[in-house]
Image 1: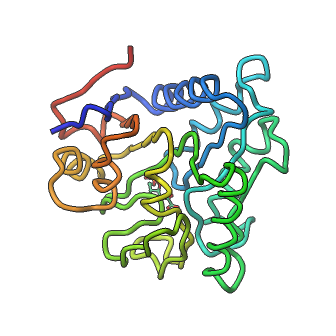
Image 2: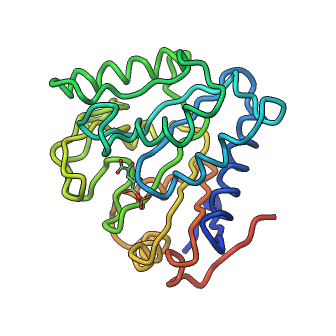
Image 3: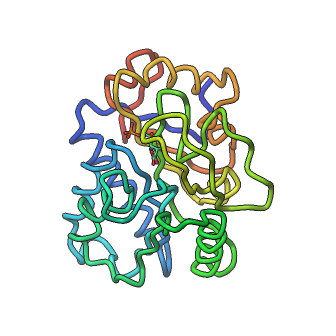
Length: 246
Ligand code: 6PG
């Protein structure tokens, strides 16, 4: 059964999905007083949304207040094809007027990923007045029900941690990673999931029915935060409960 704090929107095409996602970010930024902390994810789905967001001018979007974080990163350098930061730089950060000191990437090219995770957690806390509370985190969903780099087969992150290093991921790209934890996601004031592709259809139906204990379900089972899922037609093919935005 759908939780009341979870709103599901089904977009007809990738442009509509991207436009709705950009609107969610814009509204959240406008509602936020002071710095607006936004965590981005990797994967292919957010790219179009990043591009739409980047088109918003300074009069529309309070870019000077935007502080960028990443939900997760693969253990590669910032110019590597698999880097989430590289994707975000090419689709959003190089085009939007965000101050470089407001962009916090995960330095996952370093050898000691445990230290990288601790440093990133410290940065997250520092930039959020010690709370670690993001204003909005954008997440994706893998066909196996993973989100960020929280995979079903991985050990539960230790409690109290907001960012951790993970073992080799079971799905491509096969790298060790650094990821925000369930606790970090649970602290975020808003969650936006972008889900696309026919390979997610049965999994999306399953997680919304709250069957099993997959990472996406763990995030959705927190009833306290507004959570919006914007799925495309293909990912939502197995669902009966669809809503359009008001
Ligand atoms: C990553 C991601 C990951 C992603 C999903 C969905 O670094 O791989 O953050 O959790 O969001 O795998 O990816 P797609 O948008 O490509 O389906």
